[in-house]
Length: 131
Image 1 (cartoon, one colour):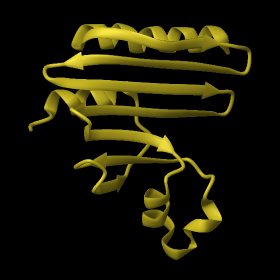
Image 2 (cartoon, helix red, strand yellow):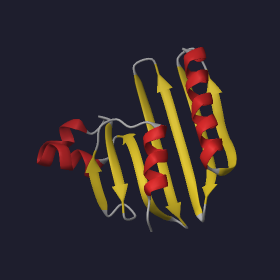
Image 3 (tube, one colour):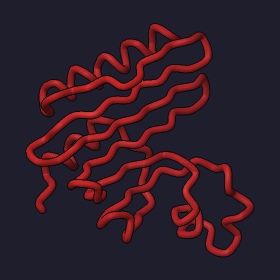
């Protein structure tokens, strides 16, 4: 798994360097059971915050475009109560530990369920973003 994760993270970093500035890797670690990549970057006047964790059977991610400390775009695949409520209604408590792909907009005032996304999907959204 380590080699696959290393190649995957290298592709993410190559793409990030093509589009963003001031890439700062905060964490990059590989083990036989998991891999983690976290970095920050700049795009125009925005901060980009990326985190991705890979394990044998799943992938978690958070890709954020921030204006000062406000979320303009936030793609997540984590357990998130508002996303779980949106998907399951009042039965969301039965699913509290389920990871669910979703999109945060307008500083988390809006949320949408999504299909699983990739870093390339996030980059496309950033490049299409209009303030």
